[in-house]
Image (cartoon, rainbow, N blue to C red; front, side, top):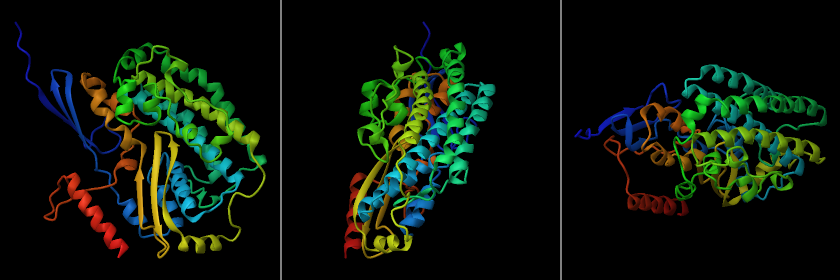
Length: 409
């Protein structure tokens, strides 16, 4: 009778070829099988919120673009929405449509980038290069609209910095037709390939119940069957005027169970959804300005007097992105600015979907939630003696109360 092998510990990270950003995993292994998972984020902390609370909201928009190089528009848009609530800034209808178009092009390039990374993690580098070649068209269109491939800088408080005029529509339509022509090929390469199916089906399963209990968001939650999308549940920008449905795995796989394969399905078909949304925006685009104030200095003066707090949500490519802003009307910089990115909500799913899996499947399972540690890492806790430590809930509460009383005094 064979004796069960004692578990051993396998550390991966914070720097590892299978990880695209710094994070530390610790796996308790029994042979090739994962028995327990732990992870430690916080390696990519850049102090963006600290910098933001020392700048005015217009300057913070430039920081928002740099929280993530892939979903910068989402962060800038959600921050703008929060400040616009506090300062009672009315955004022109046309600006809402411009915001929606650029947000959906960002979703297309983000999903295709992820598909390439997923192919690489599976060892399918030919598909990786093909996916990133396909992605170039969306990045070219984003550059055509905003002037930049990364850190677009198109978002402004009260609207957008640039318009999308009718004479630009043919270039946008060219890109949409390009992706429509490739969609069947992408479905065939990613979803009908036997090797990808064998590696991804029944791997990294996150059930609908556990997805809900772990408060997952975005394609990760939808792949588990949760019909949740901020664009529909709490419409913003122009989404309330548009007609589209939430993408679930049954669009292609009626036997979906929330595995890695279903996460591929959701992202591939959300590309088609984004094409439809952009087309609707081009068709329904209202006339008018794209900025609330012709003289932006007047808007800035009103911002200095703004007082109150607000939080806003958008559906970033990875899921719900939330910003909280508090202003006191006495200073230009916000009194408080907090960011909760999509990966923050999804990373606890790693503990669930990695248990019971093989070592060889770690890279694709980790990548399947499309993690962004630069978006997520907000706080680094360091003790007074310089040693890292873990604060208790009670200690954090006392610090919060002390900080609040100091700000109010």
